[in-house]
Image (tube, rainbow, N blue to C red; front, top):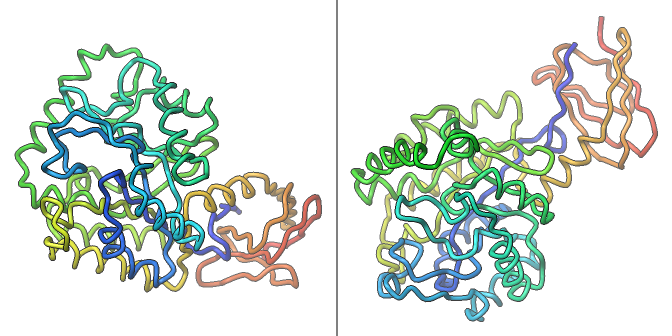
Length: 372
């Protein structure tokens, strides 16, 4: 019999929302119009905050500020800080660090993709977020999902947990023994391909559900197929949503809906202008909200539970299964390949083959028996 621990309490699917690019220019009305429904439904939103946004030619910056080259600290936007502090207190928002300036090199590679160590920038950004929100960010999201192996190690050494994409192409770019000049060739080809996509289709690709994988010291995300990397239509996005929901329903793996608030507002309009994108976002949100076995959570609580589950030990001897935990944990679930005898400590669902133990105390033993 195989036993696969599940991250969600009672075997529920962890569902997260991560929105990138909150910065000095972000208006509270923008976040409220995109996420008010999600918050009303009990979703948590993890905001990747840019500490010191630079005035560059990028959609994360309003049109009239894209050529200034100046740095804009999020601390100065007092109304945004007050708004988000209230959301943090309500436990509907958590703050992640999203780089420092959100800049790119001439090849459009992210600011943490180079060969140099960026320790000062990471610490500078962290200090700005502490000054703004009074709390130290635990998680780090590299701009453009682009980060070198050196900087991944550095982030861990600084006590933070990186969250990043981990495709074959990303691993190729991070491979230290390949010269950067060689890496530039395929990267430029990819960027050239994406540059031919219309802005309308590109905006659609900035929102999608992905599968996330918490590990010791880092969290990665991936897609079931490379064909979903650059989605260009509502139909493709909803197709991906169905595939991920079906897949995760079987094995209860965590899902994160990636999003960016600013594409919904053409040229930073004061109201939503991309109605098709907004309609698709609400349809994706509805699909996950209707899951009876979803667990709406943020990265902090997910990672805390992951660490607890890592300290649950299982020993199988014949039909006897002994489970111990180093820390107290409630509603601990695992997926088994065969049936488990019901008892006062555990509930076994025959249809899903998920067994849930109501409560495990440190150093205590829970004994279960496999059905013959």
